[in-house]
Image 1 (cartoon, helix red, strand yellow):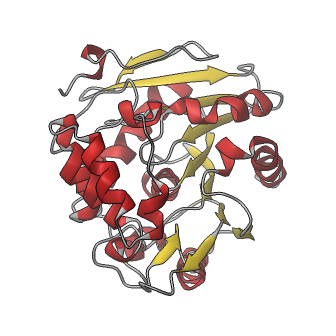
Image 2 (spheres, helix red, strand yellow):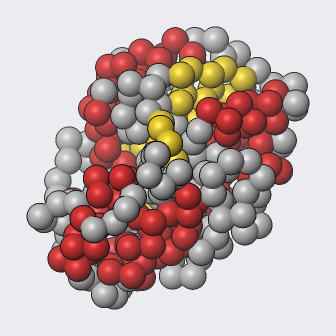
Amino acid sequence: MADPAQRDVFVPHAYPEKQVDLGEITMNYAEAGEPGMPAVLLIPEQTGSWWGYEEAMGLLAENFHVYAVDLRGQGRSSWTPKRYSLDNFGNDLVRFIALVVKRPVIVAGNSSGGVLAAWLSAYSMPGQVRGALCEDAPFFASELVTTCGHSIRQAAGPLFELFRTYLGDQWSVGDWTGYCRAAKASPSRTVRFFVADEIPQHMREYDPEWARAFWEGTVALHCPHEQLLTQVKTPVFLTHHMRDIDPDTGHLVGALSDEQAARARLLMESTGVKVDYASVPDALHMMHQFDPPRYVEIFTQWAATLAA
């Protein structure tokens, strides 16, 4: 079912949810903080909705006017079959900044949202973005055909393959029991971690066609990371969290390897922008959700270095 408004799966949260018509989609979002404060746009990870930032929003609101969004295909935003790509996600955010934020903004995204933060640094309208925080962004490791290190199929891809097979586009299959059975038997440490007796709330709000777009490589088909990273135009901050190489499979466990982080930094620095990097290997992938005080401290210290 393409329209999430027809899916009775949502629960209330601490902040009121709002919607804006961006043309092709309606984007759902929440905001916190005073309008006179510097603007921040928070972009969730794949399978995540805006409310994963809920606690972090409260802390950030002391110093910022915070917006947190649901990307298309997630949360209460429109689902768009056959239309999930980095460029479409990115252009939705460009429209959101133009129509809702209406002033220069610091963007901060986690995981694939972190790749989109870099996308906004590279391709947003002039003057829209002050800086981009890429929280454990899977540069190269979320591509099917990559120029550096592990590809999607040697990283999180096996998880997305199971989402594609057992959940199906727009939950057209919906076999959560079958998914869990297959996940428990998977050779992938990453996949075996994502097992639950009940469907988690964030998954109920997610279109599994996202997973297929990553597994099959269509999501970044026209936006190769090597090219994206050489187009950034603002200061960038890459935080790099837990990572390991599975000795049994040789697969990457985590968002990106040390090799991929180094390559991403080199490409971004080649543009002349300031690129900061923080290695925090004891942090979980979604630091903003599982350790909000630490995330907010790191974000706030970096944001203070940006030009007004």
